Length: 425
Ligand code: SF4
Image 1: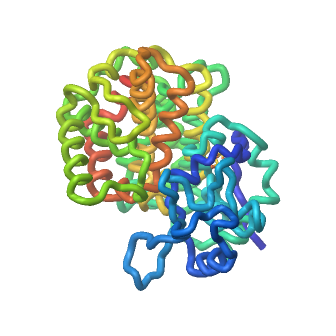
Image 2 (image 1 turned 120 degrees about the horizontal axis):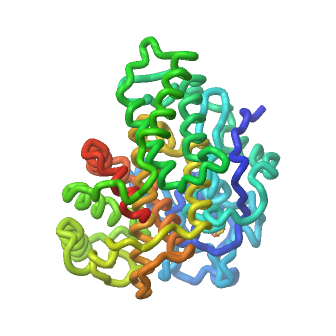
């Protein structure tokens, strides 16, 4: 019997065969999957050129026998054909594909006795809300759950709220629910997603200072009500009322945005002394923040750092809707803390998630400036978010102490709110 599934009611998705995930992702496979695919008889007669390997070693020691699917010289998965379709799927059907390919863009996370479902906004169809309602796909999703957790959902404790401060699952879920409502906003309150993120940052950061020994159940409800009421009255609703980010905050943010701007997580990482030297030079330029932005990825053109700092005007209405859905899906799906996000506590996980907004908008400005524009189109913002979300929770770098320390420093300097306001205007 599969565990009950919590599905986001506001999200649609169907694959539109853009082939993006088959280019961006390093698909790890199990030994059983490797053998199964090896026995499928791939050669030039069915589209795999002679000499093209099907698998390469994934990271880790050789005795762990970890492989991933190989990529063609142009970066596409070895099984992606010229029409953008999967050759394994075409010859043997969807169940013959590796599990990782079958699951994407879904992500399942333990939530007490239930499984929470989130989606990866690195898929443009998810970001644009294209296709069938996710709730209408419950039957298919239950089948996937049987494959993902064949022995049932593992009972793991909930993530800490802040280091050492833990609630039980019902109280933790209450915090998640209130955060989701805070980001959704009240009907007709007219607030932008940026203001809702600012309010949420305010009360979540205060929650991080609480000691929960005696705060449970009704008392927790009272505390959450007090904090969210304070956020509604005390947080400035006009973005112009926020101070500019600090000098240190801007530098840390540029380094963070540089990591988000790359297409690769592990796959295609520049190796060798030449690649490392180029990365070091780029890091120094991002640290200084003057002159031209080094293009760490082919998607961008060189433009001056300064070109991204003036106001680019309000967000296009479609972008407002997309970010609102993004935050609600990630929060409901627990896709920001605990198991799903490098085991970080609730509060730190929300700081990281909130930073996706200014990072995506900074990237969107870079896309716009690369095309000579000084205002944003929806497509700029869409590309900004899909680029950023590709890493969020998946790039191993983001779980390391350097990245986490950067997020905590930005929170300590009170710069996360200032960055949200600065790049939203
Ligand atoms: S990125 Fe999304 S729409 Fe494109 S092929 Fe992958 S799952 Fe399909």
